[in-house]
Length: 490
Ligand SMILES: Cc1cc2nc3c(=O)[nH]c(=O)nc-3n(C[C@H](O)[C@H](O)[C@H](O)COP(=O)(O)OP(=O)(O)OC[C@H]3O[C@@H](n4cnc5c(N)ncnc54)[C@H](O)[C@@H]3O)c2cc1C
Image 1 (tube, protein in one colour):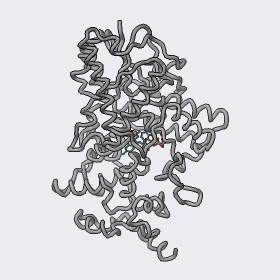
Image 2 (tube, helix red, strand yellow; image 1 turned 90 degrees about the vertical axis):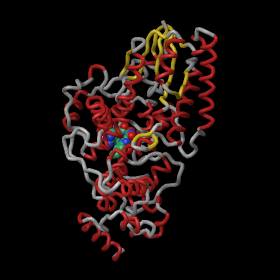
Image 3 (cartoon, protein in one colour; image 1 turned 135 degrees about the horizontal axis):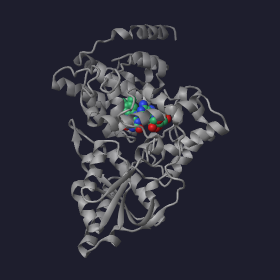
Image 4 (tube, rainbow, N blue to C red; image 1 turned 45 degrees about the horizontal axis):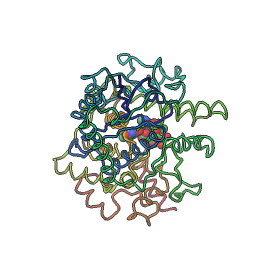
């Protein structure tokens, strides 16, 4: 009675009920090729950086499990044909996996269920087990959701201890025929070839679960940076006390940097929640410790919204409850505007700085994500789904519910009216000395505060004309005036 344990989005040892089995079992991670190499709206789904990051994160986990005598088979393939074959050739009698959030993950579950019984564990939600909400009764707005759920949030681990149990067998041990063994060996060597073809990303440190836990505990207890989270989370990068950018190589601490580990399931969100509560009980809490939990509830909200509304959230008009801006201009103009946005060349300094940061690092601050999304939707008048698809391609912390949910939220395609951001006002508020802008845009580096002025860079000026954007939107006037005054009286 061999059980197949699918460890997709469960790349961890702590709080991982999937590793606690009885009897014979086999561990597998099955990545669907089309989710990386396919395209949506003409945009490839994963950049080489995101693909490389995912593969090497997985390889590190495979080696870690191997040292604990749990052989893990990693495959990047077409699941439709491979999964039924594996189930048949390995004599699999049941499958267990992390509970899906979106349709594509659910397809894997449904595919397996055509052949054997499938069960799932909601490993990556705060609201598991007895806290689980009824989808039909789920409140629409985040505030309602938070008010209802927060008082009940006595989060416990999904499992009592972190022991691994079960008799873990390698795929080749399970293969019934010589042909099957040969096929499985070929799959293993294909994985190694794929790794060779996809070099380990050098600019992004890959952290193991242990390192990620240590990093988060240092954020709580050593640097104690969590105590200023509510203020610093609005920055675009770390800033030293004198307002300059600290040298590269230090772990940033303006926010928690949990998202990449949470999106791959290499940290347990319940473990994170418990660590914050423990800090509050031992050293005391403040607005900021509360606010980190508040943001984790946003993540939770989008997960349940995705489960409730499913694919409707991927439509241009979304749920159809609020107006969503229609894309403007002919296709060529839209393509031009989109390409400028993707490359950080729109001429709007803070937007460009954030986009170039994304291209370089595979990440962007939350404030940055909101601003570039608003600019694409409300200033460039493009289809919000283009932006969401580009983020999906680039973000190392890509998470279907958080990404598409936030984009839909800003566009007004979700449960609430859309959110427009005044770019210039935000720039002066959150990057007052244009430090971040100048760090990312060499062409504006020497300009000081004037780097804030839209379409100033000579390369960008012609674009502004082509895009038919007004040189100054009416709602920028007061910010422009303030900026002119500062420039005249430095
Ligand atoms: C347009 C847009 C797209 C986004 N795409 C993603 C994505 O693909 N993957 C992703 O993990 N987050 C996404 N976010 C949410 C948020 O920007 C990131 O989670 C955050 O910037 C990651 O950095 P951090 O872990 O240091 O965050 P912190 O500020 O330290 O927050 C802690 C955790 O809370 C959660 N969180 C914080 N803000 C949000 C939010 N607005 N929505 C949902 N969860 C939140 C995340 O799990 C995050 O790791 C997106 C936001 C926007 C506006």
